[in-house]
Structures are given as structure tokens and as C-alpha cells.
Length: 411
Image (cartoon, rainbow, N blue to C red; front, side, top):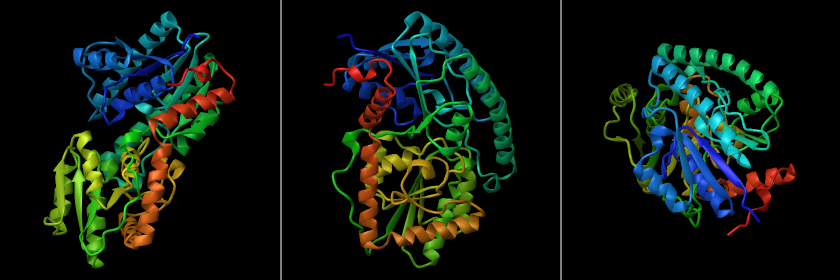
């Protein structure tokens, strides 16, 4: 029996990466383990002798399209316009290439966004979209004027892009499967006539999942962790404010911040203003492979991005049984159980959020509640393993009774 062929389309791809660049690598290995042939189409700049060697070791053929300019995450409005133009050009080339390749399936992973251009699958090829976000909006009241303006422009672009998506789906067959990572994107998908299925864009290697739940360590210093890009939409300064509130309440706590970005100077100013220099460690960037030890050395992860497609640090922390206190909106409220990431459901003011988040941290000082939160985190992480996600896609397509994806020969 011929093995069905799945092509993964990913604008950015990097074997073994823990960020969005690693999505194709993780999905590829999961599908290969289920008994399917996998190919990757990616941006030409991602195709290097080193990466080709890594893809070859797992049996994946790689095609690079587009120019050779290295992808850099946009940091300004102009760079965002340029990067999206480059991405649109790449999408057109992918569509043409797919017509010549005609695989059984295409799963589009790029940039995890419903509002950006999508490739068109040729007749006879089943299109799997996502998991994607893209329709979520930042909490504007949490942002200062420059960032709020950028988010307004982004939202305006989104409205234009959504109109383009409506035209796109009027002219092509709808995806065989649309996987959405937050409620706002699910609503958009339904408005486009799709039948979305919830699935986080993030996943975890089963080997990374801890074997048992954590026990709370009373009497010592409570070690808080925040990890991500230091940009205003992620509001890392709120983690410092939460630490200040906890210490005001008599909790012996410290905070480690992992990441780099333009907000770093303001973050350090916040630490100095609150007199917390001896209790906050801004560690800069850290290799993804080292983050697992960082999770293990921490007691609670703080997560309060004002706009995000997914929540990768929550999934990774859950794999190590690390309880989370989060702003429960977008992907977090959509998929992550409250026991895994407890916290306020809405954001009104920074002061109110800080008090509420600190209260949820204090609730985890109870030994039994901490252990239960850790056990719930591990159960959630098992459902988020890449093998489980690929198996779920296969099962969903089997229920739709399309194609041959369910007939692979599992190892």
C-alpha cells in the first residue's frame, strides 16, 4: 500500500527550534511516526547545508522557494509591510509548486495566521489549515500610545485581510480541516463558512513531559518565572509589579525574566523604581534547550500577553508540571484548563490585574492545591504532545471520511 504524502508549508523552518520555526520539524516527526511520507516547502533562506542534513536524517525532502534574504521578525511598521510582501510572494510560489507536486495533503503552518495570504491546494489535494490564530486583538487599554497605535494599524490591516480571505474561500474549495487556536479566530473561521476545530499551535515532545507531579516546597523562596520577548504587548513589567505586590503581602518571592527586546530599558526602570534590584534577575535570552532546566528550577510561571496566537511557554511549563498564573483570554481561555493556568479572565487596569494575579499566586502556596495544579498541568501536556496532535488530525479526517490519511502504517 502506498504511503500517503503530506506536504508541510512553513515560511520559516528550523530543525529542533522551540519557536514557531520549529513547528514543521515537530509535525514532520509526528507524521513520520504514524507511517506517512512527509515533504517540506519553506523559504529558500531556511535551506542550508546544515538544515538539509538534519531533514535528511529523518527522511524529509525539502524544497526552498522565494529569495535568499534571511527572515527577520519585523520590529517596525515598515519592516512589517516588507515582510508581509515577501510572505505573499512566497505563498504564490508555493501555490504554483503544489500544482506540480500534487500531494495527498497540504498542512499550512506558516506564521499561524488566518488573516495572512494562504496557498491554494490543487484539485485532489486535501488542505489542512493550521493551527492558526490571527483574529485576536490586543487589550488596547494595557498599552501606551505608540504600541496602541501599532496595534490599531494591525487591526485595520486585519479587516482588509479578512475581506481578502472571504474572496479566497469563495474561489477555492474550503479546507478539509481548519484548526483554530483561539476563540476570536474560531469566530472568524465560522464567518468564512468553515467548521473550525480547537487546537493550540504549540506542542511538546512526549519525552519532555515529567513523570510525576511536583510537590510544593514550603519555607523557602518562591521562585517566579516570566519568559518571552521583551515587547510591550507582552507586558513583562506586570510580572515585576506582581512580585512587588507579593512581597508587600509578606511572601518571600523572587522573579527571573528570560528574554530580550525593545522593552528591556523600561523593564529595568520599573525594577529600579520599585526597589527590587535584589529580587529580579533579567537573564536575557536563553537557548530553548536550556529552558527545561529553568522551568524545573521555578515554582510558578507568570503569563500575561496582551495579544498572542498561542501560549508556548504555558505548554512547555505544563510539561514540567509547573503551575501557571495567567491572564485568561485568547488561546488561554479557549483551550487551557483553569487548573493549569489560573488567573483573571479580563484586564481592566494594571493595578487590578496585579492584585488579582498575586492572589492566584498566593492560592498556590497551599501544598495540596499546588500538587493538584501540577498534576493537571502534566495531563494537559500529554494531550498537547506532537504525537497526540498528529493523531488527532488523522482521527478528524477519518471522521470526515476523506482521503487516505487514516490508512498509514503506524510504526
